[in-house]
Image 1: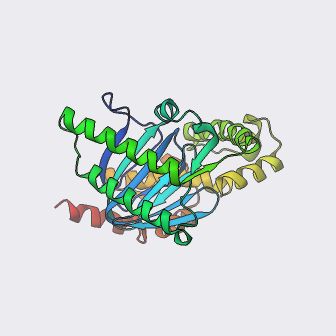
Image 2: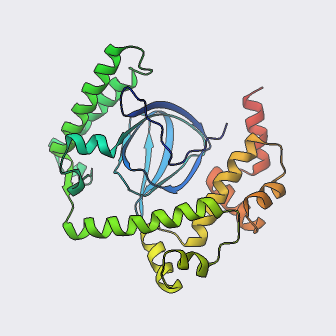
Length: 284
């Protein structure tokens, strides 16, 4: 079925880190972030990711993607993929990397640096080995898992770290707090008609400044963001309920049918009706 993911992340109490292998089919996840380091390793298929303001990645089998803590990201997939997901919570990182607040991990310029290319391959090998440990069935597996996580972090720190200036850090904390308030409000009220004045007032900004601020950090207009949240809910319900498309649009506050159909086709390369037929066929 169509997958639906959000920011509430359960962690295994024995390992502190979320570790899972997921199968997805025609999935869309609206822009969001986690207070954790996220590592994705593709076992089968292909996924499309957007990070930050405008960095797009297509990752396929054998590729991996590292998403820094509090880095805004979204994902879409028009077919099937199988991925290994590792999410290392910020308190864990801070415990072993005291200056975690001042750094991030970046893989830019990889093609120009032979040593980084070699280290990149080492990371792929570590991730493949970790994937073979799933599920963690014994204390020995958990111990091995932890050892490999520390190896990964060691390579990240030594070869892929980038310093964050104090000014950028202060600015990031400030705008993430504000964005957190905005996105929390939207998740609670997305099915309602949220006006620009209303949401700007929520964060004590004038509407013009709010518009520029939101577009700069989320990479889309506020209305596009609200509609992406609505689309995510509707897409889930397309395959999990028997409600008509019109009923789902009304339920989730998407008032523009033509815009919905345009967004849906762009994300999934099919219509809602075709999606339901293909999903029903998969489970016959």
